[in-house]
Every structure is written in structure tokens, then in C-alpha cells.
Length: 259
Ligand code: OOG
Ligand code: MG
Image 1 (cartoon, rainbow, N blue to C red):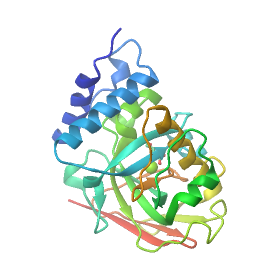
Image 2 (tube, rainbow, N blue to C red):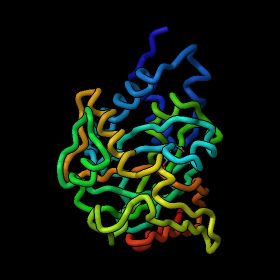
Image 3 (cartoon, rainbow, N blue to C red):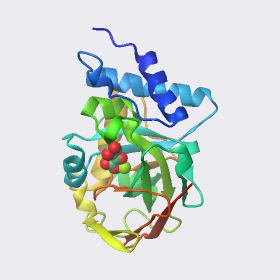
Image 4 (cartoon, rainbow, N blue to C red):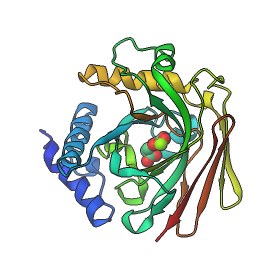
């Protein structure tokens, strides 16, 4: 069966615009390949850029055992970060979101382009200007926040909003594998992790993303932010919820949910 990429991109964008969850694509087609899923994701990004958005960066998802187990998907995924999704005040507009969740992120701010193939973790550190803490707000467009690998790829890996911390460090100022994070939601610690939870090394995750983009003739660009993926599971972001990610070396980042 031929998959109509533009159709499914419009389907997902209207779910965002109308703030409603929709049935997973794989419940409606016989087969959705990984290539088709990335083609839908690309068509969705084109629609967003066509509305005047720009690209602020890129992201990985499902790079930790915690996230893969929570979502029941066993492979990393790659997506885009439109500039309109970067929150500058740490306040997530819940009236624009469907059923958001929040999760801590180690974020690379690139000083140089990174183009695959053969990008290594060391190359990533060389190209990185700083490493900062962040919190991503994810918001699957699918019913019950439930999806298969290819569904979540098509849906730009549930990307919705992101808060970037204003402290940070040079990429080699501390070992990223032992960098610690304590995630606290409304005063309760819901998860703790170190950078090594991200496929052994967050920089390796970013290298995988650069190599993935290289296969499509694309690259990570200087000035972009790149999220390596959450190291703990995600938690609901509800009205009045405040989540804090406290990092060793990277300071703290806060997001709160507001209607
Ligand atoms: C998919 C997005 C995963 C991460 O950091 O693992 C992600 C999801 O869990 O909805 O952004
Ligand atoms: Mg994430």
C-alpha cells in the first residue's frame, strides 16, 4: 500500500491545531515503514516551516531504558525542534497542548555543523559550544499517548515544547557519562539518572543523530540545540504542576504548567 505522506502530515498538524488526540496511523494502514514514517515527519516539518516557523534544532528520543520501557518501544528515534516550541519563561501553555508530559534532557548547543557519516562522540564534543540542562514537554498527538515506533516517528517524536537552562558548561568540563540528574515533580523525586543512561553516553546519541541525518543529505547546524533524550520516564504536566530538573554541573531547570 502506498502511504500518502502529505495526508498524514496534515492529519497530525490538525490534531495539534485542534488540540485533540487522534487514532494512531498504524491502526489505519496495513504497514507503515520507518522510511514512510520519516517522510511523514519531514512533510509535517515542511508544513510548520511554511507557516513561518524556523528550526531551532533537533532531538533524539527513546535513548534510555527508562523511556523505552515506559513507552514500549525499543529503538531510538530522531525528530525536529521548531523555534516556536522553545519556551523562554519556563511556563508551558496547557491550553495549547493535549495531554503533555515533562522529562529532563541533556542539551547540546552546537558551535559548528556536524554532518554524518562517521561522526563520533568525540566529534560531537569538538563541535559543541556548551552543554546545558533542559526539560522537554512531550505531547503525543495519539490517543492514550500510545503508539508504535513508526507512529511516534511520524509524529515528530511527540515534540511539543522545551525549556533550556541558562547555566551550562563547556563540553569537556565534566564527564557527561557521570553527569547526574534528579527530576522532581511537585516536591517528589520521580527519577534520578546519570548521562550514561543515554545509550552509554549522551554525546554518542548526538553522533547517531548526525549520522542518521547524513543518510538523508542533512546535517546538524551550528547554533542549534540538540536534545539527547530523557534519562528518566516522563511525568504528566498538569495545571499547577511544577517540575524541576537538577543537574550536576548544569544547574537547575524548571517548567510549570499553566492554563
Ligand atoms: C516519545 C518521545 C521520546 C525522549 O526523550 O525519550 C523523547 C515519547 O515518549 O512520547 O522525547
Ligand atoms: Mg525527550
